[in-house]
Image (cartoon, rainbow, N blue to C red):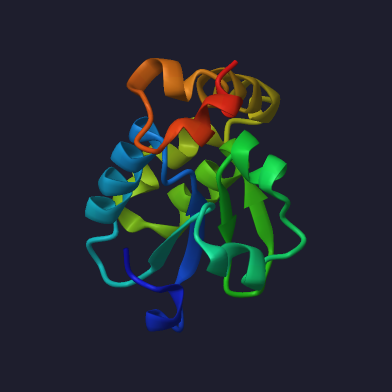
Length: 135
């Protein structure tokens, strides 16, 4: 994965690098970042994550992905997805649907349902220590 330092003007997506579903979604996001290095990716399990973003606890990061924009704002879960639809031109078609007034709560609920089942849906790619996160 590219180091976030390589992209001075990039937003940083922090994701669960042990989750096959998450890794698949990150690969898709990489393809959507066709206009340039707008996004850098960092696994929550990478030591640099805790160093750079000490306010984001391991438990918080296990619950949802976070997008850190260039100003340092944190966009978690579905709010992060919604943010990326505004940031990446290839996702602009999805933006109107995700930004319909009154739908943010629904998108957050849907995101949480997928996030808490992500290991069951696609498996994990780490050692037995990950088993503590299976619900």
